[in-house]
Amino acid sequence: MDALPFYLSSREHRGEWQRPRAGHVLRVVADARGTKHLWLRIDPPIEGQSGHGDATEVVIGPHFEGDVLWPKPKFPTAVYVYLPKRNIPVEALFDTKDFDLVAWAEIYASRADADAASRA
Image (tube, rainbow, N blue to C red; front, top):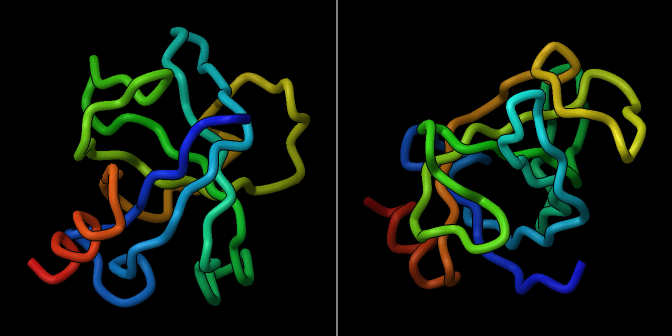
């Protein structure tokens, strides 16, 4: 997709999830209610996720009802971060039973904003 990258970081977690990462939108996946989730390629990868190994792709969804991630998110926006439990078809409907919720995080418009939040 042609979206500009944004940055993913967490104020809730320390270690790997706190570290800012560029997020590149690979595709938009809706859930049964029509809420859009973003399948991202992240750089750098998240290292050593229990049961998942190193993660180069994650799915994020809005933490608060009514928040919008696509096509124009507000920054910062609180998100849930998911990893797939198995290979999922590209056109699949997003269903939390197919994913592990692994973190709470926020998305930021710039690396500088993500860096500042990770130090807060």
